[in-house]
Every structure is written in C-alpha cells, then in structure tokens.
Length: 179
Length: 179
Image (cartoon, rainbow over all chains, first blue to last red; front, side, top):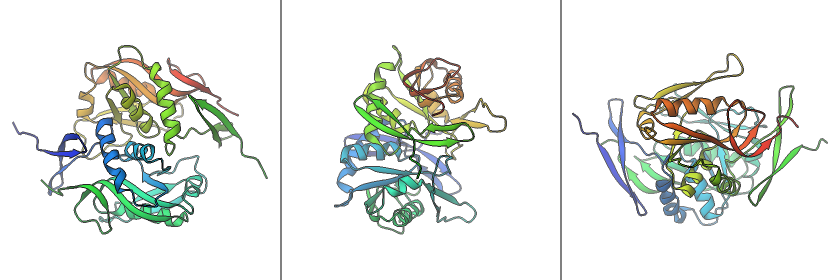
C-alpha cells in the first residue's frame, strides 16, 4: 500500500498536513484547502494582516478558494472587500470583463466584476488577496480590473507563493512546485 | 430618472438596503449579497447560531454565496464544515455527483462532493447551510449528498426563505418573491 505524501505547513500557531495530488507527469503538488477549515483560514488571515501594504483602503479577490480568507482579512483589518466572479451572473449591471492570461493555449478563463462593485474600487488603493499565487495570471487579471475600475493596486498578498510568478507577491510561505 | 427599488432588511443589529434586480417578466427580486460585506455576513451568522438543530455535529454548504457565512457559522459554533462544488475539480478523488432537481427543463446543475470531504460526513448529524432557499432544489441535492455520504440531515438553515420551498427551512427572514 502506498503512503500518501503530505506536506506539513504552519501558519501562525496552526499546523496542517496538506495532502498532495498528482498533476500530469510533473509529480505531486500540495493541495491548499481553506474551504472547510475555519481554524486554518483564521490563522492565515491573522498572519496576513501585516502583509497588507500601507495606505490600502480596499481588498479585491476572486471566487472561490480565497473567499473565506478575504472575508476574515476584511473583518480583522476593517477594510471593505470586493469579489470578482468567474461566470457572468444574471443580475450583473455593466460588468467589467477581463481575460486571465493563460500559460496553456486554449485554456482561457474570464473574470467578471459587477458594475456596482467596480464602482466601489474607484479612487481606492486596493490590495489583491489570493490563497496561492503560482503563474500569476489571476493576480494580473485582478490588477487590470482595479485599474479599469479607476483604482490603484498597492500590492498582491497571498498565503502561499508557488514557483516564481512574474510579479511581486507578498506571501506567508513558499510552496514547492513538485514534491 | 427612475429611483431604484430597494428592500430594507435587518439581521441582528445590521440593516441593509438590498438592491432589487429585474427577473424576466415577473418583476423585481431583492439581491442578497453576503460576498463583499463582512459585517452583514457576521450579523447573519450570529443570528443563525440558534437555528442550528440540537445534536448537529457538522455543517454542509455549497459554493459560492453562502461560503463566508458558513465559515463564520463554523467558527462561531465550533462545528466543522464541508463544501460541495458546482464543477468537477481536477484534484477530486472519487467524488459524489448529485444533480440538482430543476424547476425549469434544460437548466440542470450538478453538485460535486470530493471523496475525502464526503468521508467527513459519514456517521455525522449534518445541518445544511444556505444564504437563500427558494425552490429548495439545492437544499434537496445537498441533503442527498449527506445521505449518500453516510450522514443524517438534522435540518436546513438559511438567512432567508423566499416563497414556499417544498421542505422545512429554518430561516431568519422571509423575502418577497416579487416587489
């Protein structure tokens, strides 16, 4: 019987053995799961508070995995947050539509920011919040949404950075790209 | 210029003017947005604590709108929570796949529960958590997922009930189906 490989990480005073999942021929990558783990989420949010750049007055994230994390960060920092979606919602009014630059041809993803939500970023200094930043494509698309909304990006903060994304990311920890 | 209709609701000590959106020829329905509003989310979670049925030892929800709400309810109750997805994720192992009964032919939705997450519901007494219950289809699909995981449903709790769903829902407030 094969023992499942795990990766042990500690955020604040909370330690988790992350399961690893096979990805193509590359090997195994650790799976970060904030959904379903309020204790781990809260520890990450608390540890990320000092990563919020000075002068930030709003947060922007995207569904789904960083959602409880950003909620907690908003609650603990007192900063409002805005959420981009990955699908058009029927109720959206004049949404901003932003393609995510993709590493692999043919696998495109599109972000949707509802018009009234974009209005909340206008004139704001906005930090982008993610759970894991790897290729950086999602972070870049969120940064474009901030600019197109009339806001300014103060920085990208994440619980984990994986590999070498092509933009500055303030992260709590590095994750291996293959273990 | 037309004044946008809103609906004022109060949860705990937090009051919000919900925007309303046009839906088909039916008129306008109120739009409940917990995403992007940590204060409203926390007020709902605190008010929903007494709705959790006696003996419940786990919570189940589905992405996306009830996610920060369920995170907060888990944090405040100390009960673990599990999240069903609406798309297959590449990392899922032996997921349970459950169709949502639909009112409208041809608009089907499917829920995915990762195998290791289903295992966390086995033998548990599970409350289903949603933001709004209207047709009840999503709640019914989540209930089936609990049963198929080897758990027992203790009840369905929601911030809002809209109309007359065909199952018992413990909700904080009624929402009009049209205003």
